[in-house]
Length: 260
Image (cartoon, rainbow, N blue to C red; front, side):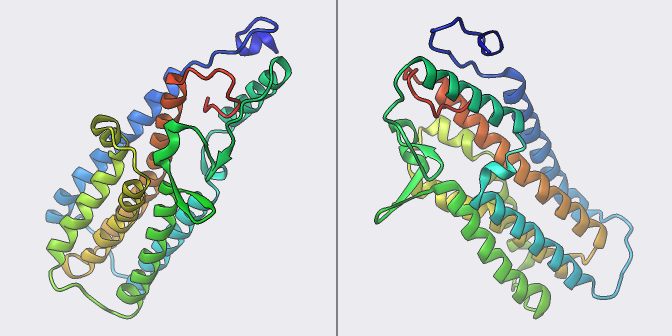
């Protein structure tokens, strides 16, 4: 086990940031941004498509399913982390630490360690501690499902679909690069993360809703639905990358809850 973890017997394991994990998250971000940037050009030059019965409701139903997946990812992020190997290594490192030294006083609240570095990642509501990002995703998904009912099933339309399109575009853009913004601007407030992630989920809804009056194109809708799924994956990957980088910079080697 010591050889597997890269430590000698009795030594405190020092976690290192796996470069391939960091690179894969950044690559996913680049692909997501490229897919988003390409969408306005597709809207101006829509590809050939077909019209099928109940097309609008079908698109709305598929988007609602994606929102439900987003809610699951927000409520239980480890089940949607795409990182079984990381979870297994986390368990192995934690076991090694518990065998070599007393456990740290740091615990988990809102699935984040209760240390100063993660203070801006949580929301405290009375006696409860919630993950700010995941709470924003769940709240945004709930609003998006409600909006889907009105737009795709009850026939409501926005007054200016082009304005709605660009609002949704920038909501998604800032949602995708949010972790870079937090790092550059040194933002460490749970409320900000909560609001940004609400807007991040509302972005694809606004993009999809604007398609109905602008170009009711099934091919474009399918492209956007697939891209939305990839955006969720990118959001999770970038979040994990941010957590690993924070834990790598941490000097508390007694913490058994460090991200790996």
